Length: 229
Image 1 (cartoon, rainbow, N blue to C red):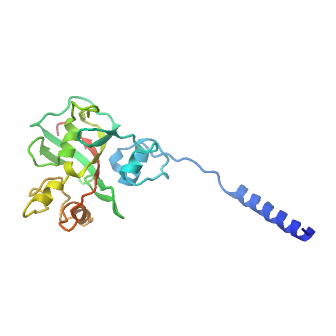
Image 2 (cartoon, rainbow, N blue to C red; image 1 turned 120 degrees about the vertical axis):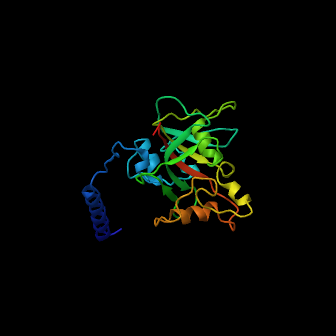
Image 3 (cartoon, rainbow, N blue to C red; image 1 turned 90 degrees about the vertical axis):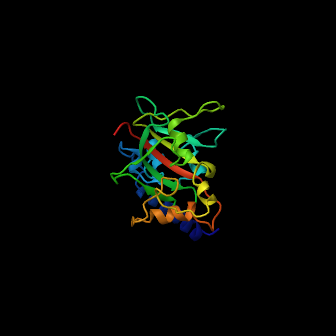
């Protein structure tokens, strides 16, 4: 090895060290305390656990269960997965009572997994528990269950819960209809408003009311339960 070559190598090493020293140190910027529903589904798990706002993860069943996200419990009987981002207070709702929720909906597949949110719309989703108008996964998340080896506790008013809903507890029944309408009030809800310009209805339809796609991916829902309103 010639002296000239050694000098060139040494110069490269020194330049690399200088470049590394000029890089600013990484800092963790934590999101401010806010409702988990104020974040898009990609960020909501990170915010709920105090993770860095840069650590955005996709709302998929695999990522949602990782240690840097909410640790999801699973009911072996129903297949529903859930995790509480915030505990509510007061008394749980019962069948026959009116439930009022804000929700953020996403799918576990697709280039744009976020589908729709009622946040900042000023119109929470409302229905009577047990009246058959709402997918079973949401009612199960709110009312809870018992009897299996990992029972689901009921939500309390003010609480925020993330659930991952399998197809049999979601919109699968729509595809079994002879003439599905795929419109809020005509089929099982919640269904994003068709006349909204945000594309939420089109994304929902593509995943959950499309007769050409019989397979329905799991639904990721962040639910905030209100008390009497």
